[in-house]
Image (cartoon, rainbow, N blue to C red; front, side, top):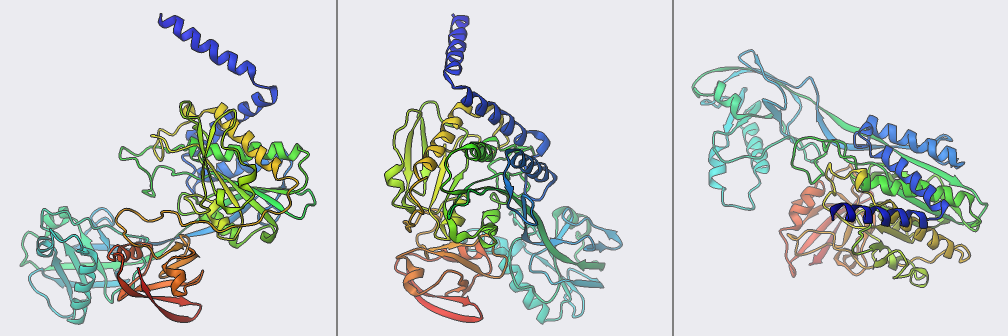
Length: 543
């Protein structure tokens, strides 16, 4: 019986394959090759700024060249490079020695992000707080006192204590914890905070037990803290079909993924492994390549076509944001943008895809079908979403976002090529081509702003109504977009404003912004302080 069932399934697959046109079979073979390479272990997860990303962008450049696309990157190449500022990193010159015993940075100790840079050589004792020497501080008591306080911020408490110690004559602070309560401290490289006046380091429990058993002892301390900027370089890959038209359709997808999960933006809790990202987003990247092949040979000549594969999406839309700020075409000529992100897992049961951006142009309602022979379509009107089309929507360009759905392998090492539904992806590609075909003679599409998406998490009961600029590396939170009808717009805020305070709470980065925002509830009134150019402005708001 099992053998009969196996042969029935095999026969069904063979018959389905035989029904495909020769051109469709070629596309499926191409998809196997493209996704198979991009999602192979050789590329080590295509993390932005790594050798794996380099292998990927070299492959994409070669594909675009073979198709016959014109380079549209920097310096007549297919590549457009951009820098990602990830905050601070601990430099190798950072050191801590206790009684000539050299400790290992990030294993035995680490500086806190608000530490000052500098060197200290002196004798110190945990039991004596003498001016002109380092001071030790056990955070045992403050952890005990605040163990039931959900609003307690240990890092802020250490910072305030350090400021107090410095004013009283300490030259450095060495923090340790003899409490069984986990302190959760680590080096938060992406936090943007003002440094205190003296170095601050945290030593681990192993070091504490080894050296600080006798609190009356005198220790010879040799300490140095040095930071540097932590940066990486990403690369967009773009090619152009010039039909001599007035307008250009932009067709894109991100090709970067998570590497080995080093950026801690995965859903994986197991041992380190390669995140191959077959669906996310080798599938969308392969769709861009195939659409480039099809449109290069097509008779659809009333638009030019820009094909672009972004890096840095997994870190916060860095590549697409950079492109829209440094376009290699006249962005005013952009007709609309199509983004494919995770289009390789069409569910054989539901046969449904999601198309976002439906409300960004009145044209979409006239040409997009809810039912096709291959699948049903679920529409989402918003132009803002968790992928690269958002960067174009914020430039008032109509967008469409194609997506076959979240699955159990999302952001896990199990997102591998053997789980791709290649026939399903073929159907998505043909649907996108149909959309482009339907707009061929329509001229430039008009743009509409759309409703606000649900961007904030469950712990937020209020929203300011901005789209944060995740690529902003300065102090504060830059508003990349202002949502119509929401608090920020009603108060008079504008795109580009940099939020530096909410009420009396400083906003230094996105994390501090979210922490402060979570303290408010509907009906609360406060002020928002922003920098607009060189001007500091205050706005009264009511949530």
